[in-house]
Length: 68
Image (tube, rainbow, N blue to C red; front, side, top):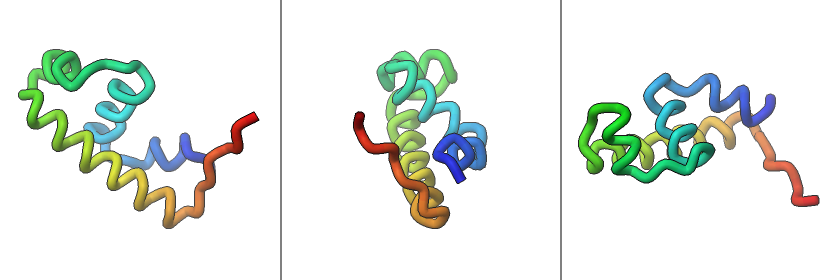
């Protein structure tokens, strides 16, 4: 199983906040504005999403690609 598969298996709100923060590089404030939530709520959602991603990755034994 690939990391993309693990990410796809996350709840929609977790996946969305991870994509916006880690892939698109938006700040918590920018994500909050986009999702119509408070920055604090976005931070908490992001922390929970990362924890869920980490747990799912460990369960599936997903390994990050080695740097080339």
